[in-house]
Image 1 (spheres, rainbow, N blue to C red):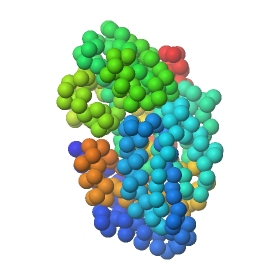
Image 2 (image 1 turned 180 degrees about the vertical axis):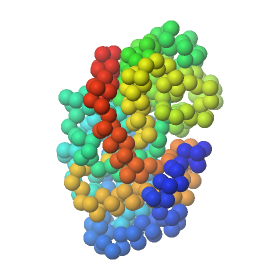
Image 3 (image 1 turned 60 degrees about the vertical axis):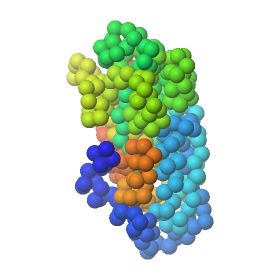
Image 4 (image 1 turned 135 degrees about the vertical axis):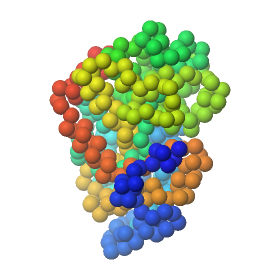
Amino acid sequence: MMGRRALSVGVVAACVLQASPLASQSSIQFFAGNQSVAQFYSGKQITLIVGATPGGGYDTQARFVAKYLGHHMPGRPTVVVQNMPAAGSLAAANHIANSAPRDGTVIALVQRGMLLIKAWNPAQVRFELGKLNWIGSISREVGVVLAWHTAPHRKAQDLFEKELIVGGTTGIDTETTPRLLNAVLGTKFRIVAGYPGTVEIALAMERDEVQGIADWAWSSLKSVRPSWLVEKKVNILMQSTLQRDPELHGVPLTLDFVKGDADRRVMELYLTQKTVARPLIAPPGVPADRLAALRQAFAALARDRDFMADAQKSNLDVSPVSGAEVDKVVAIIAAASPETFQRLGNDIAAAR
């Protein structure tokens, strides 16, 4: 499973170092000619802000990355995690762009919705995508629509015929995806917004407060609630991604229900964010050599045998995407036609 979701051979060759245990040593040797970077980070602490609640998929992956990232950095700084979940990562993204130190000691893992949030919440956005420094993404992602076993929904078609009450967090996938599917596809999600994150939505499902969730990362479901799958507590009705996940054989794509070209362009733009599902960012203005060190250290994780073995043991789906690859996705989003971008925002706003 890990190999299937790993980066292509070409990307890996371009972006990562040799496998652990040499990876850590190689990272430091890469910067051996620039002692100022090692001297700067020596004895320091990097704060990794997580724009999500404790215990969820983002938080779990952030803490996992924090265990290894410092080993690949010049100067071997420690990495500590701080949660800043307000507004579904918007607070964290705004903080990184405007308030965080610009010296390479503060980075953030933000929810992927930040890539497109300006389409539906421009008034609250205080950052420009192109001015943030993209370190990489911990993984690509597949979102799934889940119905609790007590709900009457057994297949995708039921979403068009019966209302499904789902929990949502304002401004991110759990809320924006069902709004978009209602507007574009004609599904009948009823969204109960205001949950801090997927951990709380999962608890609400178990307590029968809501009937499901319209967009939860497949990897998070497997790591955070594996018992749901074993005990058949949920029915998986759709998968939201640009390409089918072989593990979800027989589960239709949301794109399978799109009828027109304009609708398809909107859905494909929205789903682009899934290819950089767990993006790590640094503030604008970080010195180039320190940003390069952060990017290189993150890229080294893709070939760190200890990191990958620990991920598999912990049932975490990681497939690091380089900062350069994230830059390409950001460029695709920036190049989207104004009509498609505006339509995306209008569809999500209109479904409120």
